[in-house]
Image (cartoon, rainbow, N blue to C red; front, side, top):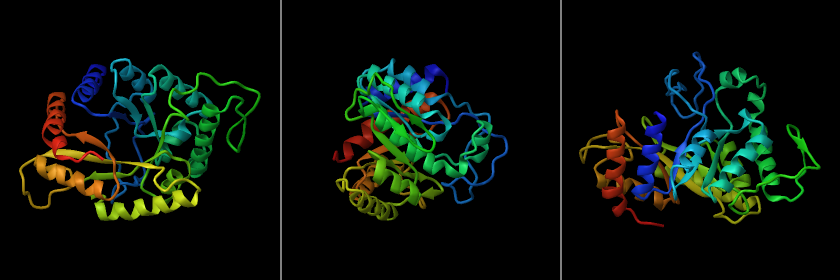
Length: 302
């Protein structure tokens, strides 16, 4: 999308009552990628190499300045790609300048070719890198005299300001459906971002319920309240005729989509990251507004 289209989508989302707008992350798109995409049965990624990916933190600054209420979130920022102290500074500045309208969704990354293009040799250590960077962020965002001595980052004798507007810090939401991602969310996250309703690979409520139960158990084992981690389920909304055979969740009539959302709510989901289909900006805006007018009134607010 063009800058004006991004702004128009976000302003419309705010206008019709959505709480969050999400931006995604790639620095480069290699022309040849091994089939290891974790959210596809074939492992083949679903992107076009010519697809433009603007820097998500820069987009957030642009969109925060164009809106008044809606929160901007990364879904997700690949933490190993960026120097942690500098990233912490950018995010805290965004949160400070927007008076607390930032959510940091994070992930470990899956594309080794992109790591290599960025001059990084940490692909096989990306989980450990990510865990350490999260701890770096929290140290910088919450301590008056931050100090850290880790494997990938070390500092002492520094001051770090401004702190985020949100307290204790900008929320960190962990992306990914894998067991390591769930453990990361339980131990270090404020939220968990399972990838769900993206046909043909659909995470049904019953399957998600098992992962949520595991998340709750691990959160408790980490010494945190059982419900300390929020959950935001992602899905592609596609309006169509009611009663279609073989329809996937979040598709069909407004009533069917609302019923699907209710099914996920019953297993513990409180937030939804929704993508609205359309070949043009006008179609996406129309579907977003239709969802707000026809589906939201049928959905119970938790």
